[in-house]
Image (cartoon, rainbow, N blue to C red):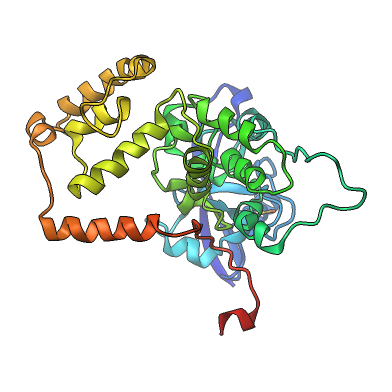
Length: 354
Ligand code: FES
């Protein structure tokens, strides 16, 4: 047995009092979980501590919290590991972010997480005619969705999503990972409609800023950001959906600039994003609204010197041998008959590996 100190964030919105920290000391074996520590504190010292849990085996997704500032499952985090990661040896536990607090460590998942899951029509819309018996799908065709299928809806990715912090209407990593689970399923009949919907929503797939926070946060390796990027590839490269958010054109601008210069040439990024693959391409009138809404962001970036007029406007380009090497990479990728999606969940039989 060892002694651990937990610093719990306490808050009861009905009391009218501000949130505060409260310390509890528990005695448990070091390999026991933070959840067991909290439950012991609740059982022995303060029965009013609010924490949600069910399976205690990292399956149900109920016990999502922030431990030492990082989201995770309380039942899946060992006390000794959490103590090593604590600043002063005291394990800090607080509720997840981006969701309203119901009490102490319990957040309102209905108000944010489940509402967003409902937004993406989270069920299969079957192809017709419906077979008499089960749908038979090729084993390979399901490999691509196994990663998103692993989601246990704990909300850890929602808690840490920086885009959602700035834009609470962003559909978010968990719901978009769920959307990919359905878009990638060969039994679904609404693939195009789903992609058009998610690409044209201003809070949809192009609202993600690639901060990687959701990938770090997910305790199940779902990598929600990778699923969002897959949705973009399906929408742009496979279905050629031109979205009113200019997201697909903006991505194409990046690709064409790196191919031409080896670097991102900021001076040409806007004309290409709002025009075409050449800086002289005609400005797309439908993009005017989007461009106007970006002006404050551009002004802010200039003021904060994230971009300076000189670096932005001065043409920069890699030497010829580097550009040739880059061109070979493009040729190789574009020359493939099939696009391979990297999936963390490897499927196959041992004999396939030999
Ligand atoms: Fe079920 Fe932690 S209690 S995931």
